[in-house]
Length: 241
Image 1 (spheres, one colour):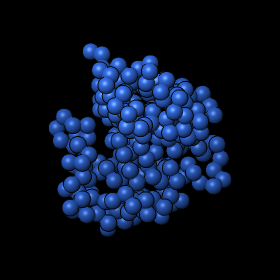
Image 2 (image 1 turned 90 degrees about the vertical axis):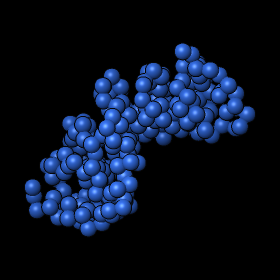
Image 3 (image 1 turned 30 degrees about the vertical axis):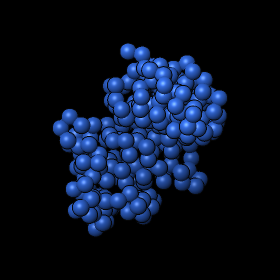
């Protein structure tokens, strides 16, 4: 391990909080059979992680991050991803450098293994990079057996939604209608809501075509910003069994 990596870990250790370390495992569902099973925590808040990420973004190389992202500690992995986002967004970065960051991301998805790790990085790196390009490599993550790669696919599309492109998100939401996990229901419902915030007609069309197929959580998230009467209308539909 390089001296910089050791310094990075020491700075994280300085801001750890034992009470947070005791709370986070419950919050991130790390018990047997839960989605975050076995994850470990130092007890570091996200604001503190962001501060340290800024301090090290120009110091740690991708080789350094390759070591750190394999850490058993959740906050070390998240801080690595925050650094990766800062590197990707750095002023004057070349497309080749962005490509290396994207390759790094794909090669390390097994360590991007909780919802906050995905949500802090997928749209900002994969979403942005593939917006003007062929999106097949991102969309193909929908077929993965990994819950987290599935979530990376749908969260990457958040960037495309912000830029007014909805087709891929609609495609993924339709594909995930039968997904078994609540975290995908929440993610797809969230993305549908974001589409509705920008173009309500697109959301309504999706609801008209799919409301009886939608998991209840997905539906509730999707219609959250609609008027009360509209929400009641859509909630009155029963899901097909």
